[in-house]
Structure formats: C-alpha cells, structure tokens
Image (cartoon, rainbow, N blue to C red):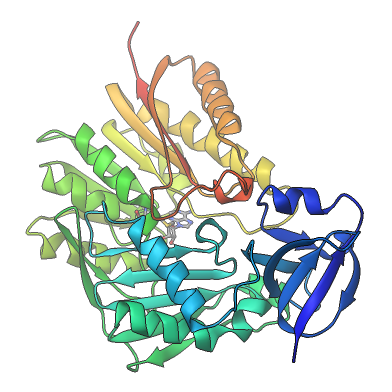
Length: 384
Ligand code: SAH
C-alpha cells in the first residue's frame, strides 16, 4: 500500500515547518488514506514532512522526518543511534534512550536499565510500526529483555487498549542499576511508569549536594527512595513518606543495598505536613502528576501552594525545600508565583537559589513547548 496523504487547511503548515510535531484532525482539509506512513502537504500541495498516521485519533499525524525517508528498520536505527549519541555524559547504567517527540520519534519512549529495555508506545501510528522499532532496538542495544509498559489510560484516546508484557526474553526479574554510584533495585514489571523516575537523576544529585552529616531529611512522595538513599549516603537521618506500602519496602531494600538505613512511613504527605511540628533541614516534595482532566493547572498550583505553605514552618533556618511538578500545564513562572504566595501567606522569607528542569535524557525540545514538563524549585528558608 502507498503512503497516506494528508492535506492541511490554509496556513496550518506553518507550525509544522517550525517543527511542532503534531497535527490535529481539525487542521486537516483532506486525507487520502493509505498505510501508516503519512506525507503531509500544505493546502496548495507542497510537501511539509513525513510522519505516522493515527487513524481516528485527535492527533492525526506525528512528525518523523522533513524528508521522504523510507520508514524502515534503518530509519529507526538511525534515530536511536542519534539519540544515544546525545546521552554520552550520563553517569548511570539507566537512562531514557528515546523521549518521544524530543527525539523525533513521537509516540515512543525507550528506557534502558543496564542490559534491559522498557518501551512505551503511546500512539496508534507508532503501534503499527512497533515491530520495526523492536528490530531496531535489538540491533542497536542488543538487550537481554525488551518489556512493554504501555499501560497508560491515554492510549484509549488513540483507540488502543493499555497493555503490558514481555516482547523479548520473557518476564524480566528485579533489576539493579547504578546511578551516580548509587545502586537501586528497579521493578520494571510492577513499578510505576517504566519502574524508576529516571527524570529525577539530576535532582537527586543536586539535593544530595545540600545534605551534610547528621541533617534531618524528609522525603515526601518518596516512591522507592531515590532522594532518600542519596541523602542517607551523605550521613543524613531520613524519613521517606509514601501512601504505597510496597514502594516503601523497596525503598528500605534500596537503602540496605547501599549499606545505609532509612525510616519509612506509609502516610499521606499532605496530611503529615499539616499535622507534624517537627523541623527538618531538607524537605523534598515530588508529588505525582495529576491526571489530565479539566482544571489540572489550577489543581497542580493549589498543591504547590499547599505543600510550600505547610513545609516552610517545618524547616529549620536555614532549611531547604525542594519542590517539583511534572506536568507541562503548570509553567515555571506559575510555580514560582505560587511558592512566593505561600511564603508571603506564611510570613516566612525565602531565597530561591536554583531551578532545575528535566535532564538531558528527557530533552526539552523548545519547538514543542509541551516537552518541558518537569520543573523543580529549590527554596531556602532564611532569617532576616
Ligand atoms: N521522588 C520519587 C518519585 C515520586 S513518584 C523518586 O525520585 O523516585 C510519586 C509517588 O507519590 C508515588 O510513589 C506515589 O505512590 C506517591 N503518592 C501519591 N499520592 C501520595 C500522597 N498523598 N502522599 C504520599 N505519597 C503519595
């Protein structure tokens, strides 16, 4: 079958020429149906790019190339190879190899944990070329396991069921990774997302740089203890808080794996901050993404305000709050504003010495603003 041909409405080619990688159905004038590979044309028939067609989806086309490249195994090998070449400075055996649109493979996420690979397929178009992707991953990374974690509800918007399961090598065991010299167990089958929050690698290193021997650290929304273990290795007394008992078990194991100990508490982080009157040197607040519903931005910023408002009095002076949001809906400016408002409402002065965003294996591609999703703010409680 030949390629699908998609003709845009007048003027709608501009943003794709500026490298925005998505076309919405209502921007399309006419579709000549063919296979999953789809060529995009302006209203007057000039070629704009080649991509993947997600039939029936709201995002009907996702960018792959500015040329008429054959979309075969070699194409995916080249894209994966280029992505790998941008990630050579990472001091970890686990990192994101492909971050979807930012690595010019919209709809695909590939995470590498030592010799194992976990993929997420988020679009119908990418689903239809999954075999080529798996072949290309096999030849470029030579993995022992390829496991799929496409178990996200958003797949339904593309007419796909959420799925998870082995693709190559059967069911992977609990894996062990080494990140900046710190070791972690990763459960790629039962863990959240693909098993580990690879996007907080730089944050964990940064927060560890604030910690001194004997400090007291509160790690809220700890998951399997990423921040906690780094802090414990610096000699801190750490309390990890999460509502999920099983992740706290793994957090304890992760501490042991590194020859340190942490305390864990199965409790609601919001409640704990409101109730406790203990003071800490460092509080980390890395809440989960709020599901994409109407009013998401307001709810995220409400959470930022509340966490900051309740954390500031729980800090020694000086004491450090490291607070994150992982949704592109709340901008960095928004976040800084709500942190400032919480500090004013509390009457507690703060400094903001650093702002961090997602690291280089989750690249922010500015032509696609939605790709800037993770923002963390370091606020210090100061005395005047
Ligand atoms: N900081 C972690 C990742 C956090 S993921 C790391 O670096 O690895 C978010 C975590 O918040 C999940 O483990 C989830 O179980 C937990 N969580 C969700 N709601 C919570 C709540 N109200 N109180 C405490 N933990 C919560």
